[in-house]
Image 1 (cartoon, rainbow, N blue to C red):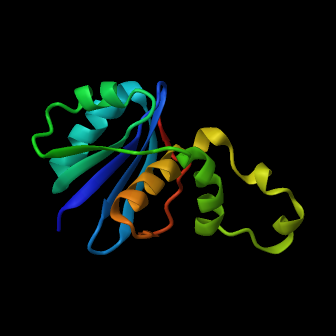
Image 2 (tube, rainbow, N blue to C red):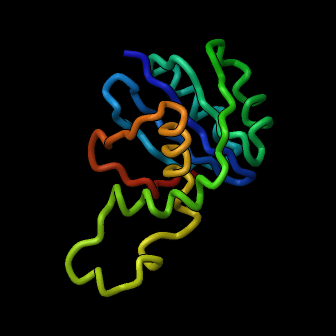
Length: 145
């Protein structure tokens, strides 16, 4: 089944999600340095049947779109307003706090630098108008440097 890629673009790093709409599942979520995004997407396209790429319309979206000129299928620019802010709440939906961790302020569990992949997930969910689940235990804080 065809999958799609969603990218939350940034100057130094991008959040990237690989998902399948029909199954409503996320198969990969990662944070990639911006200069590596082109090669990373090329590798994904070589390994997966990608039907489209959705790019958030924020910081450097035009630059990322130009880097992905080799992708001959549909590239969509989509609204990403407030996704980083919303990613904080979505993080705790995906990874609920349990046990004695409830006594610690929630802000200690996430850092803004780790929210880019969840922001990409929110862009995807807004675009598709559905919530996605994780295929397996995905760590949204994984960095490709």
